[in-house]
Image (tube, rainbow over all chains, first blue to last red; front, side, top):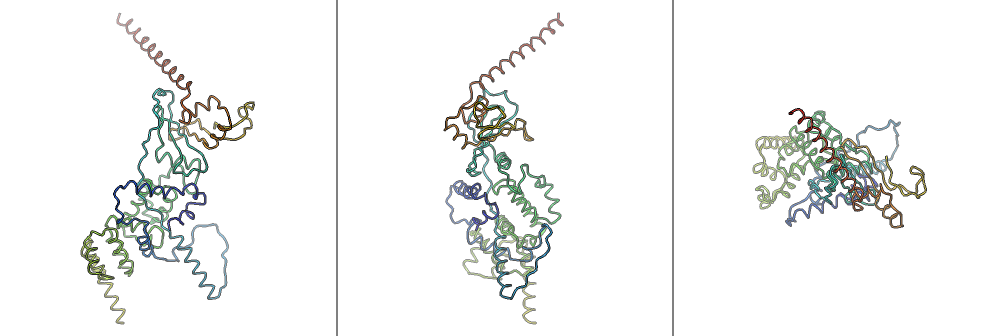
Length: 332
Length: 104
């Protein structure tokens, strides 16, 4: 699933240049964690991805809402019922493509590699030189970018320098050489006030690499803001919903999301959220109870609320209200 | 913009060349760095076919770490250091001289 994302999202060139990027980053991650905990579920597991995809929802109206495009006269087609069904199926396929989740990786390790120390050059230059290898066929992750400091030290370039140089020589659409000041913490608050979480998440994905510190910081800040103000619906039916749920589940702050789901009568989503929580934290009490008693549906939610959540009272009330409306609608 | 270029020996400096191998911006950018890009694959190809390297190109590649440091780079650094030391010595003598005169 994430493989198909590469071709569509990162552009055709990405096949040679950025192909290595995700696979290498993941491999590096696995090596860094020397402990062989195969049991811990990752973001890219099939089970995890299917749960997150179910929770994202498929609101075609929202996915295909009119984007700011060049003004063209509208095209009208007349179709039979069968053709209309085909067209909706095609639309659903395209929607699934648009909902492919962007990668979630851990932060990259800083580069501190010194290649040569030529202290006798000290004092000749006042400015550092940044040398970039411009071979077209090397993947960007393997490109040699070295810096000769005025002190004469020849070192490998840091991640920020690397990103800047690669953007200068191999420019990518939607990415600027110097990241816009919009991504600073204080300025992000302004943007989030205007409820434009999805737009700035898209901008962040096109500007930063998935394992850079800025990408992770911006994403976490936006998810925290959504959690604080309970604006979960802004991201539902977008490709960022999965990432947000993964972050909240890992941080164990799923109460707000659970409440929102119950209030919108999305019980299936609530149960999948809880099963995801049990997958990621199998040692917690509600997970053990659920396994013993093999709970499903409303019972699962009740056990989860009692053991794990902080806002027990609120969620229980919401659940009761939901059940009452259910019995009322069944009775009438 | 300075260009690192594969060209015939008898051509003018800025005249037509065979292939551009890289570029160097002599003005530091807003982050205080001089940006240099070198197409290593094509450079290795030309060196493999027996191209000679001009002195400034050798110095640049020496700074990059692809070649060992050029001896003139080291000599230039030493000369600069000696010149600066001599100037500092002269400046201290000059300031010591008037002070002695003043004390007397």
